[in-house]
Length: 386
Image 1: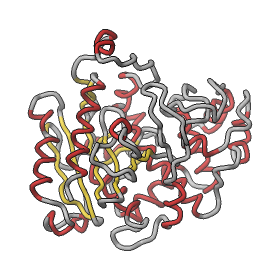
Image 2: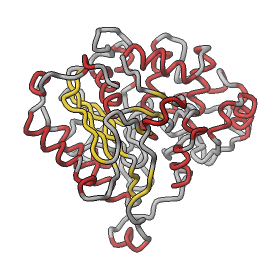
Image 3: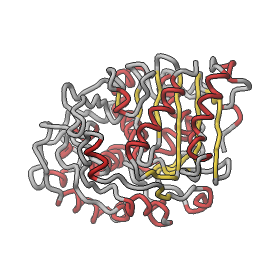
């Protein structure tokens, strides 16, 4: 449960407008009230404290959710600590740390390309349970082959690049990746429910993933003038595998985070409050954040919609007026940053307003257009709460 020190006595105490907050909460619960989503959870924070933390639908107030790819920001922020301590240089080759990785033409890939999805192996296979067998996992990394020349394009790596970042964290720090997250991020920030790989004793609190609604057909996409999205490893079976006891315990760095919406919002609060916890502990230095939040992908564009991808080290920066296509609202500032997750998980912070939000649902909408519009609608309202 969230410590009460993180809860504002009144939204206005932290500069959140009550009427705007009420509008946000009404919008958040709409799909639950309409019967589409089984449960949702929302948290909005400013000045290090929560203005609201609510759960709607068939889930207890202390429910935890799998946040899927929103985990990538947390994994990346862990690596930022090694950059801060001069233990990691993102311009160096991966093989400087993981020599085995260089097989099959991968020897020249640099660490930065892992964070920006330009490493060239988006479809490399890896079963989560392999993580616990170090010999097997390293052999799998060696066996991976390139899909295209590293650095030549952007293509989202759903899980592969983050497995390598987790391996780098382990080799450089000498700690397990999961314990590094707990000791260097969750504990200093006071976020007891932030897990990447969650122990079984907490599984009873997790809202299980279910799929809802009807999938769009090729004709539906054609009518909207949109290409049919390519088939990736992010299938319904892959997502519902996170309902299993075995997979939940694996620290999947690209998608195995389990926590509450409040943990997400408060994590991002630290990032926009000079890297400090609410109690003033310095976790990330401001210069570290300035370095890691720089967009590094230049004019590289998303192959699906043709828009600039605006990738920093592991997070997306809102940028221009196409920010709604990058997981933000139209009303976010250009400097907002974050990373959402499969099923419609929302996670961002906006330095211009000081607002951060976490939105979680266990109802994964089979209609990605409806899901995307929902995310923009929620983000629009959240961004205008101060």
